[in-house]
Length: 278
Length: 344
View: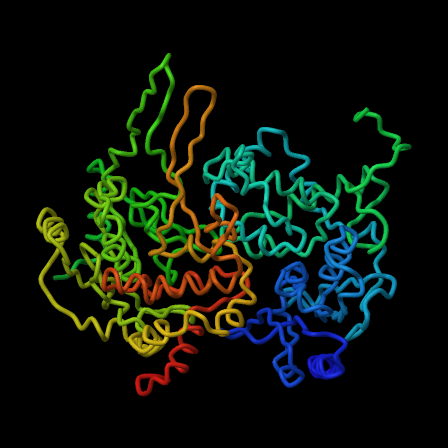
């Protein structure tokens, strides 16, 4: 599949249909792959595909340096494609400005992990084979959420007190996330200081919970936040819980399954059945 | 001078019982981090190094520095307990971490004497353990340090045969400590280099840091920065796990008419770090911020204090979500500088 990718990238760049291709290159230490942007056809040989291609490259699509290049190609795994679609739904990137090179590779080196590519063809191409079509409602893997849900409130509070005590407020979780694209995050505002920047319990709860809420209905479950966290905080438990709430309360809605139409919480209709806002 | 393992355990217990807080690396699952111990057995000394560095014991991640309250027309300010730090023994730090202390001393005792840092320095004793192994991210030797350096330690223990350690006092504090517990140490010497042979074989060769600085001096505006920094996502993981990074922010947290002023870690890698009140940001992109990181560590700090702001511990490399690798970047700069010899 790496060879196929190299050829496609070279063709796309040589033909001028994209100004750059964002993909993965070999990392500096063994068993590693890291993001790279290439702009010339002969750089295509740097692109690799391996189980170590962890990063969600959609995070680079909202960068000013990338946007000003024009149309770009991006190598995207299943959740990465969904992230790109949410960005389109939210008008952060235009459909015609991205050439999606879908790839089906196992995440995190687990050969049994299936790459669940979208059930309809919305990427320009798919390298490798389509492993399985999975309907949206099945996507939220929530088994470990159930364990916490069954615990009582005191236990749950103690659990998160322990986890958040290690948070150092490095914001790696935010920075790796393609859907955290605000140029001025709520945590960076100080008039007033909505979220305390101090890495104490109050500040850490405020930060992590606010972020989980801001991602509800938008997080595509790529897991990068949890992988990037230097403190090993199980952030995906929070995100999966929010995804479950959204799915159960909004007619099975799962983020990233369409690039047209409204994002879940971004619109309003006068005939909305809820009346709490009136 | 040497100390056997059971005597070392006795030393730890005596120190813990003496009213001092003893901290050492403790098992946290996939990593170790410093935590309080009462006994040697509670420490996990098996990993290459801890996730977080020892700077937290001198420069905490968040620290109250004073409290304030309004009473009528008066503002009442009070010192916090942080100004009276608890005597502490750091046990099991690595030589790279210890070496960060003389480096940080320069800036925290420079034009303004930071009492929050300096008082903690005065009441803390550092007992380091030399490295008998390393991993691919370690690069202390590239910067002229060593897995058995004494820089910054008060007492350096090097593991030798049969559960024994070579014990070297490296400061007045260390000499006093050894004297106070003289019955636990015994005479003898050992080959420190042989003891750390496995690490020394694997660690990288010294880099030509003068050539690197010379290149930095001349290439502030170079296409290298944009290309080298592309994948950087702008989090603060590297700066926060780093033993020598020391930027901080002062914030006030008020609740009605009273509150606390805090000193918190900050990072030059955050997008808004240099944003001015006018809205202008002189470091608006990852290129300028990554350049700042390398310049500060390998040009500005050496110019100011004759020391590099890096000890080669490799934590930034391990923590980075996108594998920005400072060693790789320094090697590229070294190549571009046309340096010869030393290397690979």
